[in-house]
Structures are given as C-alpha cells and as structure tokens.
Amino acid sequence: MVRAELIASVPMRIRVPSAGLSGLRAAAAFMSMNIERHVKAHRELYDNLRRRRSRKVAQTKAFYDEYFAVLDLAAEFYIETVRIVFQDYALAKGELKFRGELVEPRAIRRTALFTVEGEKDDICAVGQTLAAQELCSGIRPYRKRHHMQPGRRHYGVFSGRKWEGQIYPLLKKHDPVERLEQGCGHLATFC
Image 1 (cartoon, one colour):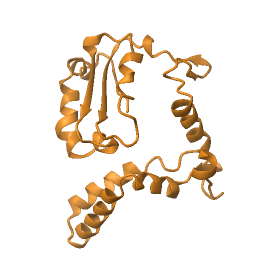
Image 2 (cartoon, rainbow, N blue to C red):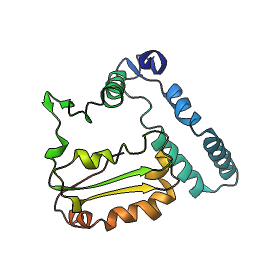
Image 3 (cartoon, rainbow, N blue to C red):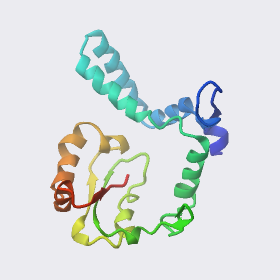
C-alpha cells in the first residue's frame, strides 16, 4: 500500500535515487490532516505579501520550508522506516538492528533525556515519545523529563511561539541539560 500510494519516479535529470516519496502526495496527505490551518496560513501569507510584511512572510515561509523538507526521501528509506518503526515496532520490541548490531536503548547512560509530545498530536500517538523514557532504562531518573504540551499538534510542539515561549525554556531548565550545555555530554530528544 505504501509503495503504490506514495512512491513516485524521480526524473533522471535529478541526481537522487530513482524513486522517492512523492512530494505532492505527501504534502497533500500532511496538509489534509489540518486543512483549515493550512488554508488560513496561506491566506495570511498572501495578505502579508500584498501588504509587504516581510517578517511575517519570512516566518510562514520558514515554517513551510521545514514542514516540506522530508517530502522527497528515497523510497527505500521511507518504506523501510515505516515498516521497521511503525508496522513491525522493532525498537519497542527490542529487535531493531543497525549495521547488523542490536540497538539497545537501555545501554544509553551518560546523557539527559527530555521527551516532548503534543496533547493533540496528529502524527505520533500520545505516549509514543513517553515510551522512550522506559526504553532508555539505563539513564538515571533524575536525568529524565517528559513534557506533554496541552493543546498542541505535532508541528506545533517543535516550532513557533509555543516552542520558543513554553517548551524550549523547559528544556533549558532541565538541570542535566544545563550541564550538557557546558560540554559534559549529549542531549537526546525523541519525537
């Protein structure tokens, strides 16, 4: 189903793999989940263009540049990811392998883990990011934090005013993160 519905041939003049996730089909699928929001955003974009509000135009364009950034993935990568992560649940079942070696989230120890999800997420099921807390059992509890952002959908969690004003400040306040910013390790986030 995934291959037939979302994969399209890429013209030979473009130097990428011969098949990729159809940008047009994927954009339509993503946008249809929140069509009213996207219609409103584009009306505002054209109004802001007409009124020469360059800052607002730049904000809207930046959002859609990021939103559409993954639309032309190589078909093999996209299909493999959907199958392994979302159909076979390989990571959750402890069966995910990378380059022939088993991926063991419980082996992660020397980092902080701050997971975030939106209450109204339309891409990831609520609880999916929280599961990382349990999978990464080697991280000490005081170095873990989970945040559920009320009223936010998937993209609203990681971009825009709510991210900048509510979520990112929590990330910065997470005590192990402050130490990490001083060069003591790495930060892991899941979405």
